[in-house]
View (tube, rainbow, N blue to C red):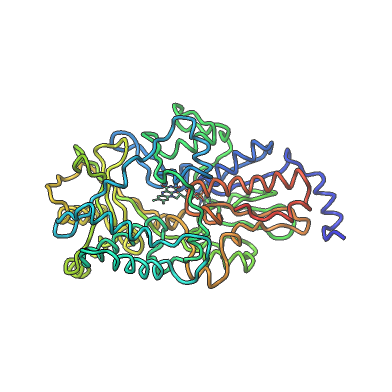
Length: 494
Ligand SMILES: Cc1cc2nc3c(=O)[nH]c(=O)nc-3n(C[C@H](O)[C@H](O)[C@H](O)COP(=O)(O)OP(=O)(O)OC[C@H]3O[C@@H](n4cnc5c(N)ncnc54)[C@H](O)[C@@H]3O)c2cc1C
């Protein structure tokens, strides 16, 4: 016998795609993907509420230098099974990375250039030490990698141990940049194996249009019409921070905005970042979220990765250098750690980038990135220039302009991208608990969760976020197409 009360069943029969009121919180890729897919499915009352005064979330393309820069997502990571790439591959919108990663140079803190064959061999040893294959293992990625790397190095002849150690430290910082973790020793090895890397080029870029061109594509927005949101015109409200979501009982869901405005909905899709959920879930949801959801919010992690942009009069790196890895020598590192510049230890690379010939882009991770965000812009520039002049074996002029990101400080993000830690494993939770919808007794999805952190296999990426937006839109479509019984059987798709 159905547990769905008769009165509710009768009401359900009256609900339809034409009448259902859906509010999406957040206009990052997950929110835009959900909204556009719902419209494609024929839903009529779709609204997106966005706390910032712009759409895009952690996709933030701004005019800068000779064209644009991406303060957040920049590359399409991979081709096979990547929904972003699938959408754009035939549209002449993106370019492959070519030789980009192979022409990074390795500089020691005494300005010595490590011979490229040595550097490449050590880097390959480190890359080969990253676990892959189907078998889960407990413990951290850092433990596994360290053990394996030194086994690999032991097989190599004529390798300077100090350089091997410096390259390894630089490699680990780079991996933290990819994963989003502060250190590799908090990163879950098991989850690393569950993340599905899309085969193909991992650094496909968006020419001089930036990642925002993907959002325009989803919305069918015109590039030459400023502020055009295509099919979402009139459906997105900016500067509308949601401060409370009341999902009690089985009546309307009620959202309260920061200015006290109230809105009613039949379904709410939350796409705010894991950082926002961590900080605000206690006050945001009334009643409190169920224990499994809270455990996922607590157990999953959101790391900090920030960018540093330097615009020069002309490109300062030699033509055949695409970027630089910084290798701190032991004594210099000791001195650095005792100085006011200690935070620069976590700047792991700097590189040129496509279609912006006069620009250099640097990356900083973890706790030191969060510290950097608290410094004045001038202090950050002073420190960065000190470091670059310490390493580079040629003169570096003062840049014309400088810009850094502050993803952690922004209360609408509180970090950069998510990962699964060994603590996540300990709590036996994961993206599937975050993704699970909160339904009523008839299986009607009321409160739904999308966003990169809710993706089991593609978390931390735009393609993962996009998939989760589609997942939740499809969940509603399924519900209205087949009725409540089908929905209660649905599992998160990824
Ligand atoms: C520095 C950096 C570099 C990156 N590089 C890449 C890359 O090269 N390739 C890649 O694939 N991915 C990259 N990423 C990750 C990618 O940007 C994210 O995975 C993706 O944008 C997440 O999308 P989302 O929709 O889940 O969340 P978001 O993009 O964070 O969108 C959530 C939205 O919710 C809004 N919001 C929050 N709270 C509220 C509230 N209370 N009320 C209303 N609105 C609210 C936020 O303002 C935001 O707009 C990068 C991220 C960063 C920070």
